[in-house]
Image (cartoon, rainbow, N blue to C red; front, side, top):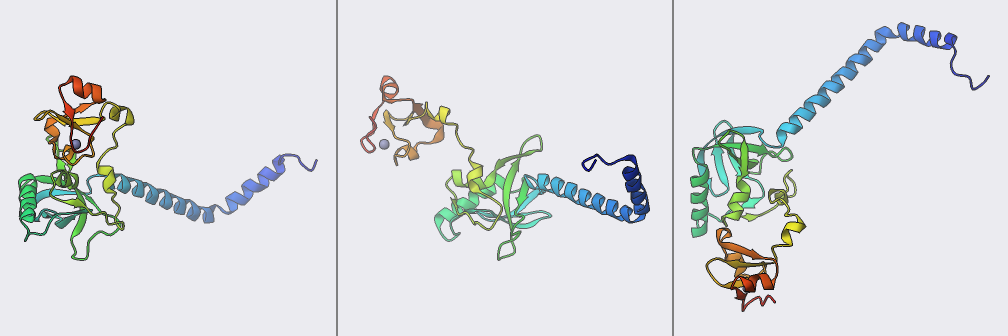
Length: 226
Ligand SMILES: [Zn+2]
């Protein structure tokens, strides 16, 4: 008898207690609704935070890594550093950013951790607009790929620059062991300093030395691939 499930009498008592506390319960329910609503709002704002929290045309380019976006203000590209304007490479970096961004619509992923840097500039990942109006290429990455900035990962912001370069699956890398240029007959280890000078447009990849030799390529005299 002791372990019997609650009888009708017990359930009825419970129901009466609930009815009695209904007034107080209303507040409980309301509080639950508010928490649910705030949770939902948070999920929606997090989703928005992933790509385009702000957008607008670029109205001014200060230097390679600093721009002004209409309606947003001065934006400092997150986790990259372009050379100073005084250096020739700094002027080149600015020119690159001008060519790519000035007058164009961009999307901004704002840093929700720091917000602004010590100069009050908004720390952002800048995304180019695709022709269909959606957010496209990551300009922070483009600046690095073009050789106009280096990665300088500030750990206090929400961004991780490593995310800008999607990992290449290892099965794809299997066919890409040695690299040559269509403009020469040498093949290299990808780490070779000469390999790094090959423009991506001219790269030709080989799965092994036999593959390279059969294409008329010879081993580089600096990195000595087999
Ligand atoms: Zn080499």
